[in-house]
Image (cartoon, rainbow, N blue to C red; front, top):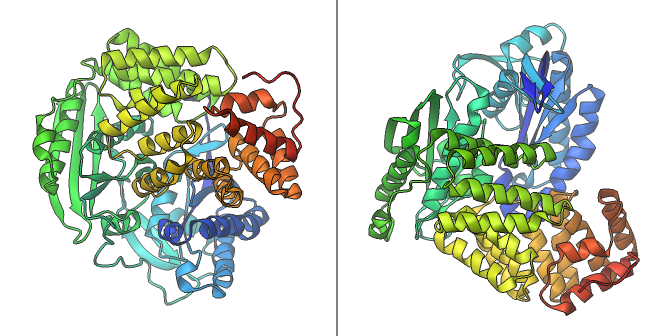
Length: 592
């Protein structure tokens, strides 16, 4: 086996999986406070105890983390130290604002690729974390055998437990600081309803039942395509993949997921791919009662995958009795490609592109190119290829923007109903300074896919640059409702719009919140510097510029001009003026 051309290393390791209980509820109540509290808990409470017990954090997941230990004893001691420290941390806080974790620990064989770790050892740890009650720790039998005579703790035997996507029962042991705590917490009988009266649904990532973890790209792709299909339905609110995929690999309960995401219905399922055949199961669940509305199994050839997705979408529409069903039924079925290998390449390319790495982008380009060789009329492959060139342009390759634009246009000529076409065109038009066309592409995306959070967020980002910043916040609020686990740039767009409207204090607050999500964002850091410069907050401005130069040592006016695609010269001048006040020296001619 290899990882991006490098041999994979196998080793035995203790894996600790930790997750914040009710993180989405906490962020809805107080987003800024929750992000700050989580960051503080990680830096001052969790990481010191992990270092003390020789743990290495190899993955952060927004509201959780995965940690590797060479010793099961170290892993358990670290977990206990963290949970006990959190009890003290939460004593001074109201109960509804407490930062509470669940932890699972497994000892097993793992596969190391680069800085990341994969394999059954990691998956089982994640399942054990899902079993634990808030504040508690669940460990595998193998861990218990290592620690039973080496730590002064009393673990409770939960017996064998069957968990999602693991083909064997797990013997589980449980510990909690409160000796009277139960192993599993209860879920409210009725899930929270969304604030609007429209039907609402979340699609969980379908389980990969192929027996090969490397096939997960396929089950993820099926899930995402179903989300895309039902997002086209007017009158139905669909939670974004970015939010639902945070539940991937976790033991979940339908009613709890529906409550956290604020939806009434949940779709879950599984995919088993073998050769040129695929079995897809899907079931629709009522989040209020937990009861099944319908369930179906499809055994098809890979060339029929699109027909299966259309059928699942139609079943959802009928079950939820969405308005305008007749309009939805009237649309023609999708036929994106009749070449199963081309479809497979696009799914693999999508997975590689979303690694957001240079190697991933290169691999995605090769896979999309292969899909086009197999089917020269496959629009999704051209649109995906366009996005790889946009990524190159953002990393300083000037000719890549024209290539991205041409590929997006080719995709549109092949399938003008494909949402990804307009995602690609929006960015290409914007950075070519074709603002009216960028707005038109983003609005067309919304018209085709009215349930997609990214469509609204992209329109918001374009409008800020196009001289309509007052429209940004309303669009971002809509995007947040569709994507509760929203990315950092949602709040960045709000901050940028406030900055353009000379609302510098509001801008500063929003941009700081964005940076708390992603401190490596170059635009967030230089907008923070400009905002602080305009407010005369010299210390904040200098610190932000220090971060700008850390991320991009050769940062200059040309970077600003490339990224800040303003239509109005006054908006660009305001940004440049703020950066000059923050300490950015302007050298060379200004290219306008």
